[in-house]
Length: 395
Image (cartoon, rainbow, N blue to C red; front, side, top):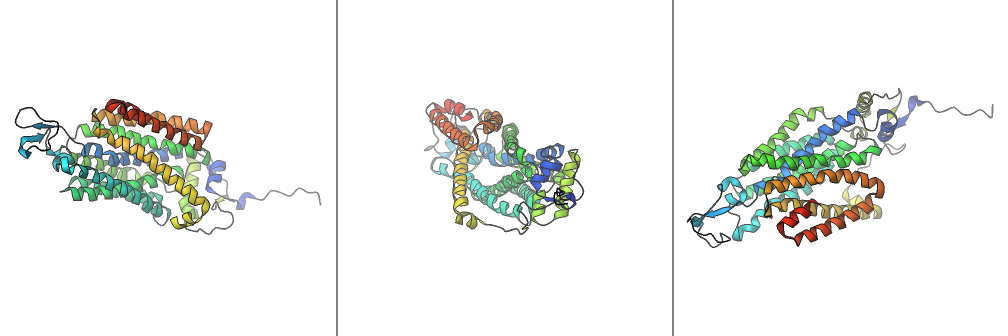
């Protein structure tokens, strides 16, 4: 019969990508993704402990004259036995190694080393999580390194070793951030992925809020690094075993059975079912060959080169403002603990507003508008003294 309507192809051999399977069969965001999201995002809190600990470990404590008379505004020029640190020399690295006066610049070297380590860790662990190690094992390695170097930091006999261990901690912190973001968002469907990706930063804000509370009961900078490293060990023992590897990574590594097992678990937990015969394939058509790229390939392409330069520049400026203001709280003449807590609290409504605003104005207008707004707020705050800067920092 020439007019016969051709029958639909049988689904017994249907091969679809991860995103399509999440949308059609497994569920884009359900109980499985929520549990996985909550467990994995705890690593952001650990990153906040490691990154923001310097606010309390490297702050400059108050000092007093030992003679009992009137003290000048600075101890520079006074005999060393004419003054002492209020609370003892172990309250911070600045007090223990006298990083004041002509040695004041040395106090910033460990922070510089930490962020250089973050830069290296992002690239290194990005490659490891995308290659043989996988997202889950890369995250576990980063957390293990963070705990190890955090403990070693507390044993630093000198500023040199302290700087070295802060650099290595930065490598692990940057690696954990990259791994956890990918591992958290990849099992989520495309329509929910952007929103939940933003929500991961809530856990970093929670870590920022908890850190001053922990520091308040541990006045020694060495004990602070020990206490903030313990959660990484607990994360490795009690949370990592319950985190699943990314089905996309399994698929790229041609481990179809493992990838389908994860998708079946997602569907079952979400109250859905994947039909028999439906399987996964790479999101690249019939060609299943995976070509690994490098930064050189990105730079060679005119399209990706421009996007790469813009992404790096915007991230640099955003982190410069974020950490510049967050870490500078130790230099403001306000309550150190309250200042850090307010930083974390101020981030909470920001993420909700970002999610809502993205649906109305889109990414590019929101990015440009918020960068202009924050620049103006910082400029105005700098003209109003410490209290004014503390207030405008919240914006």
